Image (cartoon, rainbow, N blue to C red; front, top):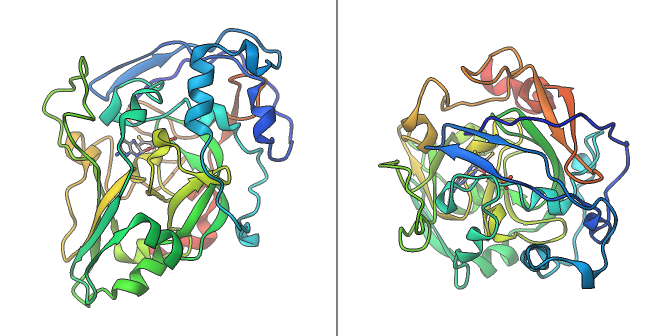
Length: 334
Ligand code: MTE
């Protein structure tokens, strides 16, 4: 996990969703340094704040644009219950180049490494304590489960946040399809892992507990908010965001949202999970966003909100209990 050094705050306009074309008004990320998933620093981006024509984009900018230029998901409706969070939506090219995906490196700017992820013919095995275990093709998932857009707050335990327009379906739809048995109390989600592809040359974080795995109580997975994303910003998920299927649990810290899911298992006991195995004091299994419970390295009272710019801009705002979703989930923890 990273420590972020913040440039001067910008005042963030309460603008609505910025169109994809407008996202090119930006600065560029510099270096992020991270060691063993534990500490890092990031410097602000420098560079042009003016809109750039396609001709004047650098090779890096063109590669980033390519990574984000994915098939649109249509028709697509925004779920009216999750159409706004009273915060501007984070610009796509900021969200798409400021990522945590440790399989591809320990910096925030691993979006280009993540293009190695092989997403063709993707399958997801759903197994364990269910009446209907089965393996789904990704195309089948996209057809079987009705897709919708939801705009959610996204809060990382490193105390930065974004607002992201996900496309996907509620996890409870999968629960209904596979019919868990009464003994099923927990669910484990496993990310794609292939050491030849993921932890590439020059990237070694020691003997970390790969593959990346996360877990939920089954009641948490059945909550209306728990979501599988197959897209973002109206199109398929870019690889850096965890294509082609990832978890989105908006009332929990971002590390609970495993990317590039290949396996979902219904279990009778709480499974070990990636960060919790590495350091249970810093990453508890529950990991609900809680401004009153400081992390050993980050006070969680406030967050640095990454918004619309111009360029990489931050605004310090107060963190809300359950990331503002208490009305949906507080009853799970009473
Ligand atoms: N999933 C996998 N497989 N590997 C990871 O390193 N990082 C987590 C989560 N899911 C991670 C992962 C963390 S710490 C965060 S904050 C979010 O992904 C970041 O999601 P984003 O890059 O789409 O913003």
